[in-house]
Image 1 (cartoon, rainbow, N blue to C red):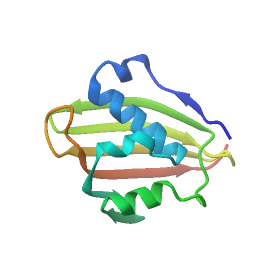
Image 2: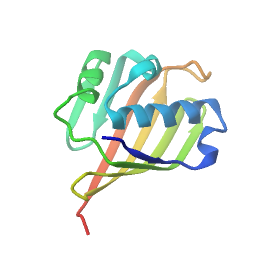
Image 3: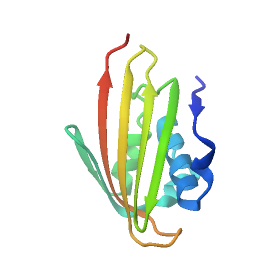
Image 4: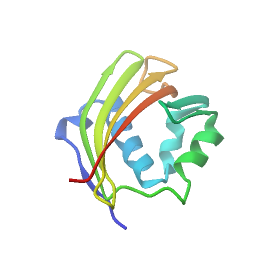
Amino acid sequence: MSMRIVCPEDCGNAPRKAQLRDFTIACARGALESNVELLSESVEWEIVGSQRLVGLDAVRGHLEDETVQRPVELRIHTIITHGNTAALNATLFEPNGTRVEVCDVYVFAGFGKRGKIKEVKSYRIKVSAS
């Protein structure tokens, strides 16, 4: 199933914004592909109220889980980067019509564009189908 992707043009005007845009799209598709290079081996990802993933293998396993229902649409609204931190907010639309509002907060291991993601804190709010 193909996924519709909506993203503002300015999401790609800085290297780190483009990386996070591509990473978010890959995560929604369930295939990290070359984007796995953005994660540190010891990455920690907390999905608030749900689970905590520690290490690259745990994150990869979660994101590539074939039993997870993939969204039919991803709308990236904003990507903000500053120093070694970043935030992204988006909306996912599930096949059953449920809308999921998303905010991911990232901490990178370094300040340069080659710094890998070492921490992610994700907030997910499911909104009933209308």
